Length: 187
View 1 (cartoon, one colour):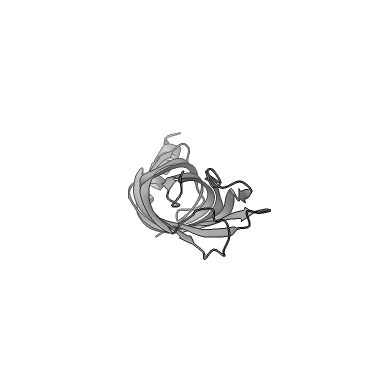
View 2: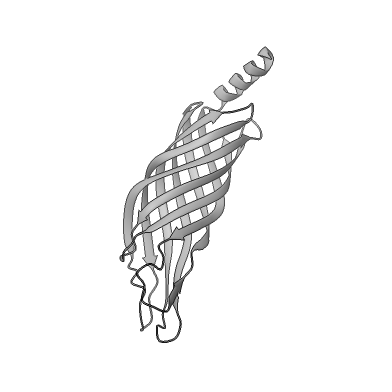
């Protein structure tokens, strides 16, 4: 038992230092069509990905900088409300990452920080518009996850992250929930 505890502590101490990673997942949007003219429907999800780098200061404390593409949102009109409006959603985040080992290789992960987002609306043809405008947003982001240490240098993560109050130029702002699976390489 003492040997197992010593191994777990040694493994946790080795996790200090720099790391980088990538993840892919699904972004779910809330409020995409609320307040839209009648006859317009909107998509509520899109494929998203992220690249990130960070530094683990202590076994349970790190800082990460990440770049997200949160997919494309689209509004489509039927009948007299003919419109197709699309927007590309991106964000850069700076987050505190807390990690608490629950077993030799498994850890709970928490995130708290800020994001700087951009909604880039594509040119809209004449017709009824959903009302989205290209916008920059910044706000708080937070998340939860589980990490699995495959080797001393490679981890996998399953995460959920929330981006609230993402501005679109019309009310209400988007709430985005991101579910992702990622890989981390530690230097």
